[in-house]
Amino acid sequence: MTHITCSFPSFSLGTMAKFHIILPRQYGIITESDKDNVNAIPKSGYRTLYLLHGACDSAADWLLHSRAAELADKYHIAIVLPSVGNSFYLDGVNAVNAFTFLTNELLNYVRDVFPLSRKREDTFLCGYSMGGYGAVRTGLLCPDIFGKIISLSGALDICYATKFVNICGYLLPPELLNSKELQDTDKNIFYLLTQTEYSAEQLPDFYLACGKQDFFAGSTTKFCDTATQKGLHTTCVMTEGEHNWDYWDPALSESAKWLFE
Image 1 (cartoon, rainbow, N blue to C red):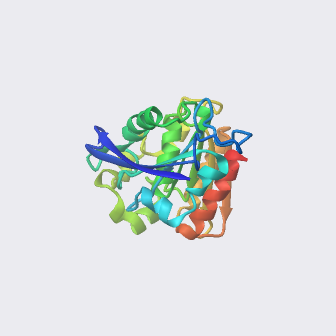
Image 2: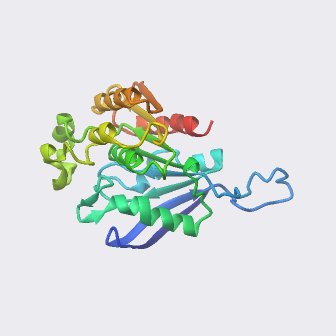
């Protein structure tokens, strides 16, 4: 694969934004032996998977702890990995606008600079833990951008999961500590899910995976049950595992099969 580290000035983050992008090996290079043009850039650009990191992590954790980069060659796709701190991919948290960065600035920048598809059906979003929350929330709010959403051990029930506050409360930005204020806002994924004005056909397909021993297992099944009742295309995978890379790495590979095979 081709690995490029980039930075550009971001108004939404108020600093130089950094991200990684992984492209297929020898992308765009056509040789005589490549009779089937397998290295050719697709006419509409590469299908693109955006990977969102968890709390207290960065984009580098995907590259250090998983085989995410290998997916670029295996499926002939581009992979974009941004870093946004502990923002929960929200606007107005920790003095940054991470949601606007993800859905506007970053999206437009990478599509202008690299040969990436602009089609909804070619654009996918995946995250683990905090990143799972960001992926699902963004999918519900921006169904016109992302065609499929993946959550791995997502911190989905941010308002009501007392275990999350007890275990990870010190990671939560102060803007997210008052659950009563969040209940009827777009920061509450379950409020978004029940109040959405989009039809099931307009919303993305969702793939949610979580380990049975993970403290977010309950919120994962709760989302799947609620989404299924509303008619959303939802796949729920609950297997043995905890909240760590021993679970997320193979879970990413399995979710990629759902995306591309």
